[in-house]
Image 1 (cartoon, rainbow, N blue to C red):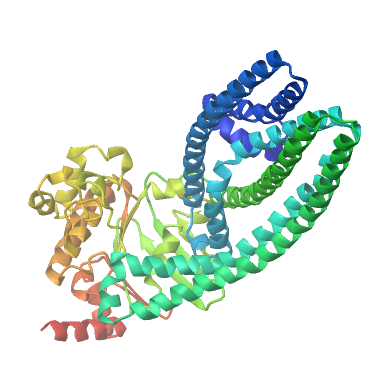
Image 2: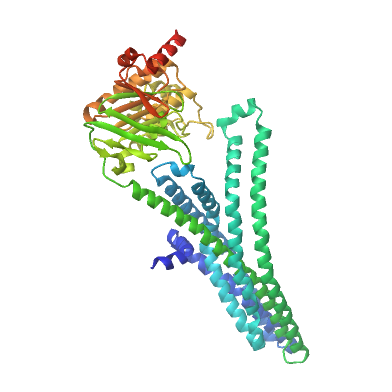
Length: 592
């Protein structure tokens, strides 16, 4: 099927692709439901004419047919509604899964800080429910067209001129699409404010900020911001909705005038004896049905126009993800590091901001334990993000054994990394999964999980919780809550699940631990990294503010203002008496 045709029928194809059986049943029930509408008008005409003529046989037969028709229509309507909900639920799950997969498949994280991308994602997520009903909407649109055709035929049996009545409905139907596009424009304008309101709502309702909010008495201020953003979004939507409704009203006025003229005409025909009483009843019923059918047609056209906009957001996200994947596609990382990682002229700054890293030159030898130190804002975490391909550099290069990191496939590179960040996730799953997520293929392996806990010095966490590795963690699902240090230990164990990484990164993951515990963790990591160093030439990269811990590193790199200020082992840097020595002595005096 050509891509242009496929896109046009995409709402129908979605329902059909997800569940063909239920989609077929929905089409059958919808047709059966709507067939009863023109038939009902016909039965009433025959009933009235037979009453006037005194034909008892036709009266009884028509009354029975009317009852059977109404009964079957009610049954089909009930079945259609149930099947419709099933189809919509299945399509919605498919669409949500697809959208989250697309959003998560982009290798870097720069897009998650791009307002244009976030607005598109907000609009897409808001339109998924409507898109999930696209198949039902398309089926109903087709049935509405059939009902209007049947109505035209029945009206023509009264008088050929009445067949023109549906023509006056054309303006309402034609204006439905542009009207919905105006509405979508309003939704797009409101999207940034909706996203801001969602952010304030999350801040107010999630545990992360609960302590600070209450101690600082921030509730009134945050609620005020929430209301202001919601009000702005509502005002923008309303402004465009008024334009939408004005356009729809213009179409409805044309139809209303045409309907009144048609009823006036048939009343004159009955008064002059050129039409029967049954014809008048048929015309009145069909006229009201045309009114309903026009409303259904306008609703269907507007809904399909809305689906088109949502599909555009979906295709935009697909294109964005595909482009990012093409850029990230590349060669495999080496099985073993021979030289290490060479950084030359590395420069990076966030969009519209100053450079965080400025012409950084650095050599990370294979098998070395490297510590990054420096004050807040020096660029340590940014360098880690570039090494893990979460961002791409603005200038300069990172080479892995003389192969540009930009030429290595991002997903394959990450299979050879282990990372533990300061802002690690507290996954509220069972403990085995919380640790096992570090290497999903071993998530069910109790042996691997216990080994990771042991190497991270976190075995006591599993033994201290009732249920051990099968214990549900976190209060959200009624599980056991852990201390900050315990969550951190599980995150460290998660980082040890992967075998033979080329790069192990610990970016200040021990902030919740005391100095002695932090040193023990880093020593445990150093021991566990021994095999990786021997077999894979792995580099262990430590980021910490505690100099008593980093002194054990083979190479210490001091970053200041986005540049490498000093580098070397602890003894060399102390002998040089530079910034490292100054900060080390300052911290040592504090502990003493």
